[in-house]
Image (cartoon, rainbow, N blue to C red):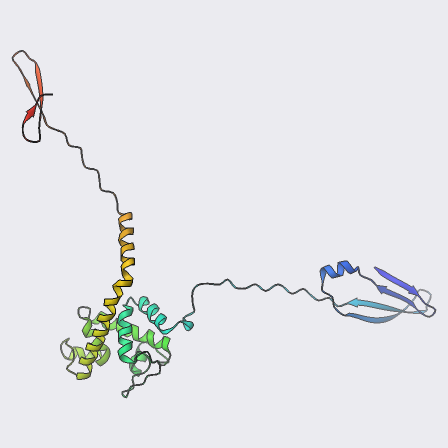
Length: 261
């Protein structure tokens, strides 16, 4: 709506907007005022004042992302990384933990005199071989170490001790001594220490795994097919005729006797 006011010198017109409509559509904002000089039909100059509100677009409400229960891998703890990576390569997490305890005792910045690096003590060549760019990054190191350990387990599937020995001395050393633990004191002690820790870890595992085993057995029993019905059994019947043509029937008892019905 335009409102015009006549003064002794000027003819003022202003644009008025209903307050309720303005408030309902846009938030309150400072207005801008400007004057415009135009020629009227009679040839006189007329100054017009135009009031233009500054329109502020409403801000959309922020939508929060749906929360999930999964945790990004870069936020996992070292035990969680061991668990997830071991399951990824179908390796026992207890074995990985046992190797880590002997190698570095969970120190991601460990560096051996021979140059082995990180939490699973990967040699630079082994790290490159299994795609580890930063051996001091726990996630990368565990990924490479678990992949190497799984590879060794496939090379020596019948004797876990040989896979453990190869992790310490290399698979070439195990092959050199005809698939036996190399006669190096360090390697022999290493196999013994990892084996002891792994054995102790497995002894404590059944206490936590037993409910799962019971649940699996119960589930298997529920899913088992019912036994097939057996064919019905009948008591044998014997018959005979007398001299007059009469028919006589009798059944055989379980004890071998007979009875006439």
